[in-house]
Length: 554
Image 1 (cartoon, rainbow, N blue to C red):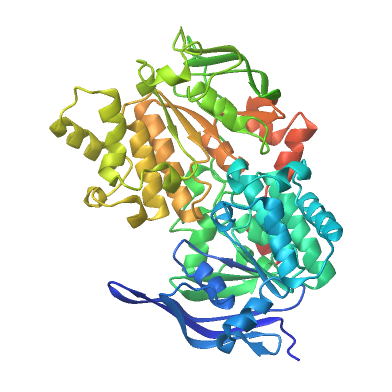
Image 2: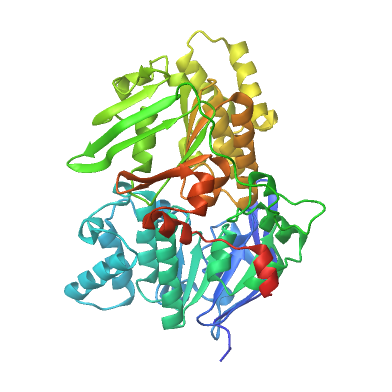
């Protein structure tokens, strides 16, 4: 019997497209021992997910394995039949998909889907099935599991769907777990809880784990070995300490340089030609805001109730002209509700929202689109793919708010304004005729930002604008946002799970828990000396790496 649980040798995968054959994976070789965790990192399009789909034989009809072998124990999966793979998926090999909501069955409850997975491979009584389902939901830290198992995917948040997907993946206690961006929609504490659970299961059950991620900090914390992929090729493989402490390949150095750490600034996100590719810390954190004559926005005693549940409880804060304020906290803490209230997408239950001296909180959300303040308050949504109309070209997506909010604007002025916004966000005007599905993640993010600034707003609300982007694209988008803020004098309200990103982009940070503000301080003060146990817990849960320290260890 092989000492490896999984061994991939010289794997080649091709896709047949309208424009000919595309070699998505070229000569990839990987090895994974029982109980070990292998990280696969790289930018979007590098072949990470295709490699995972090849291992599980889940490639679509256009894709096929054209060479190499995939040894799982004593079996070669390349030659395995459909029925053999069907028996293996679940109890032997399982996968956590990146888009959890898309992977879950929309017409079956979470409980029914867990029972489906258990019934396909195990004979259990109804009582045992129910007990196992509740145990799985509790294991992935889903509160009120009785309600969750009766819920459909569309009734759950993205983070809840992600945790339900993880519960499905571990339901039959597989020998190999492939996790494709398993924590994208999770806050840092839930992310740590879930990944600690996966790591514990791997150790206890000798389960091998392949972690596909664009979060290098996550890979550094949970993976023993790392494989770096670029354009379908593994360019570097090494133990995590060695790879992050002393990356050898130029591409690896670029990824490490683009990854935020506990000390990096926006200027550090990139490779310095005179350095070894590791982010320097030559610049200090941004200083706290300067005093302004009058805040641009003031929220006072904001409260929001949903059917007896208090999502936001007496929250107060202000945002100065030109200031960037970050809002952080766990899922369910009330962050998105706050951002939707101040962007006037939903109504408050109590309190006030004053914008530039005017109480806009009393304008019903349903009427706010016709208000003179709508064009001054814009929002950039978390998922640029989901928030862009698939039937609109990039041009029409950017032009839409102009046409809605300025009915007198002509075609010539609209064209000029759209092209100007595209140039401001460094989006190639030649791509304006493309539809969202024809754009990369970074390009769609730029369209979302261009759309938000088209009306020359004064306040930009950013809801996890870089959550789904790989580190190099994230670095470009963050620098772009910072440049726009300084050039246009914009105020930012930045909602995010990534505290390192918030620290770099915001002068001041508000921390929320269970609908209340538990701490508020300048970025510098909050990271240096957090005042509450909750904030300290959030900071300690950040997955990060210090390349300089890793080089010393290595």
